Length: 71
Image 1 (spheres, one colour):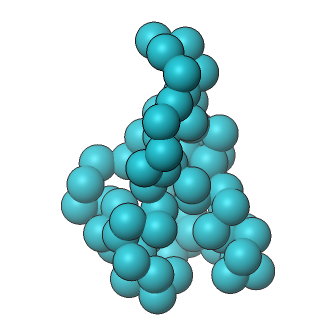
Image 2: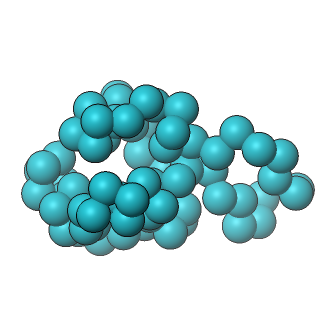
Image 3: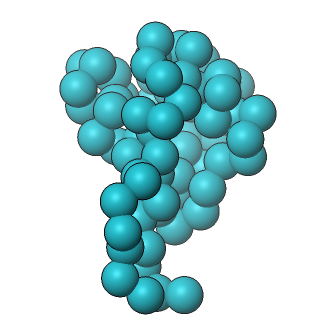
């Protein structure tokens, strides 16, 4: 599957001046887990994406890449 970047979490956190650690605390999740999401090593489930969008006050679509990604 390669290194497809599915989410824009790292970018949106930077735009909102928030850190991985802040997000981990808000969600009650492990910092390492959030770090994996930010590097697109793994992805949060849809419910977590929704929680993140509410915490960051952004549309869900802003957290997900919609452009064409090379296979």
